[in-house]
Image (cartoon, rainbow, N blue to C red; front, side):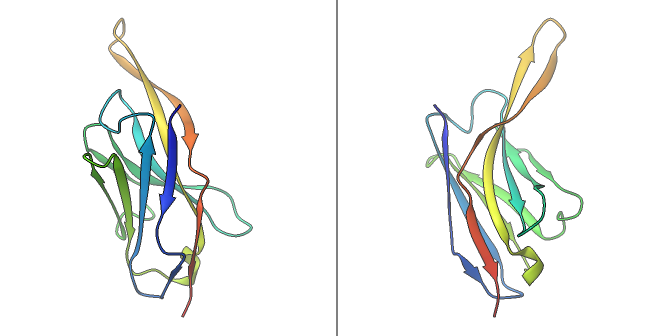
Length: 129
């Protein structure tokens, strides 16, 4: 059973950088065809996909956040991280890490997303002075 857990500060000052780490257990972030993603949910709003990093270390970004976000990983610790720069109070949200599982079909040489099948419990990050 894959388990994910977010960690990082719960309070960030405006204009600073938000940094979160997701620790994965029960599975490796370097195997299969998975993408390790970040999703956030501001208070009273819906889920927003932020992007992620795949099993090969290739990164994917939401166009709306690309200029401020970056993703990385520490394979020896089986962790992946999010950094969001120049935060404002509008970045206040519950931040989730999740796995998007992919299945490869050799018959068609294609990859199919299984959706976000494993999630962390989420961590609230408040941006405030």
